[in-house]
Amino acid sequence: MLTLQAPRTGRTSLLALLTAGLLGLGSLTHADEPGMDHPAVARYPGAEMKEYDFKEYEQARLLLSRPYKLGNGHYTADKTEVVEGQVTYLRYSIPGTASALQVFRNYQSSLRRSGFQELFVCERPCIDGNLGDLRELLMARDLYLNYHQDIQYLAARRGNTSVSLAVNHTGSGPDGRALVWLFVIDNGGLDDAKMGITGDSPIAQALAASGKVDVYGFLFDSGKSQLKPGSDATLAELAKVLQDNPGLRIDVIGHTDNVGREDSNMALSAARAQAVNGALVSRHGIAPERLNALGRGASQPVADNGNEEGRARNRRVEIVAQAQPAGVGSVPMGAGNPRTVGTARPAPTPPATTVQDQVNQVGNTVDRARSIGDTVRSLKDLFGR
Image 1: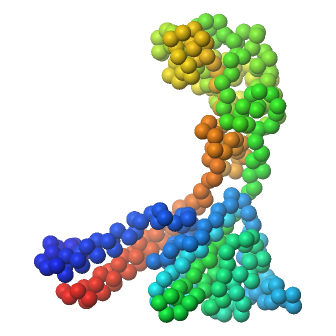
Image 2 (image 1 turned 90 degrees about the vertical axis):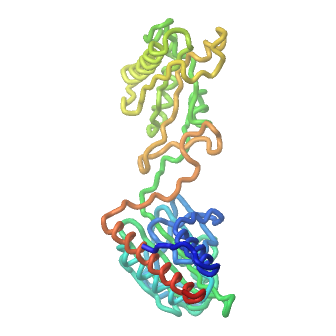
């Protein structure tokens, strides 16, 4: 552990400040950058993220043999593999004296230590043209690929995560930069239940628009939890929504006004929600695991309880579409609406952490610590001991 002593001179004070700044580099969040690093692939020290793109489900192509140019100017390769899943694209720029070869070798080493197996390595010059010439072959859509110097490429895989990585260089002298072009594909099944809730009934339209709806057609006697016959039409409407949308699961939430004791209102609201669920199951054959009954009592009013009109609005059953676990088939609704259930754009799901991952993380931390130590020693030489 590096210990900073009390400064004795202006030079050592400056050294201490610089050292403290270096030790804090690992906690930077890069808030001014367009996206986040993928958790499976470490960032080269000093790299600046210039481009970021994430797709919940897309295709990418891994090159498994050296690409070559056809007569029409397009590139192809004898051996490739198309992978599908969450696709993250990252472009980094590395200022300073690091060469493309140095950066490429470090990525190779880091990926190996992290448990990735190399599928193919294409040493420099991998192709004679511009990296952008491989856009179609890599299935890179309209994402930015550029520059021709020292192009190197590798494909690697660990479990369900695949990496397609190119490194090259641009410029010379102080303006020279190594460039990293990274695609990380987290393989997974397509969630094909992404279309919103279907149906033209008021309940279906409200759930599709905002993910929740207050229903006043479930009728109960005062202080009672037994559904009255006048509730049948509303019950049938809700049942049809569930039947037409087999991936839909809902929370059925009872609400009361503030008349009576708090504990009694909580119990009553939960019992009314249970009554709705029971009727959906027994009368309409809805699977019980699709229904979750909750009671909120008078804790979430939507109107003033000081008058009968407000109390009547507060006595309701709220239906909320549940966000489904990944891979089950979620039912997204109303992106951008404050009442929306779910998120408009999920972040990449980090891969499961294994013991080997933890060992690799420790190794990477040690590597960074050594790098900081080398910098500190250089600063000491510069400012004097």
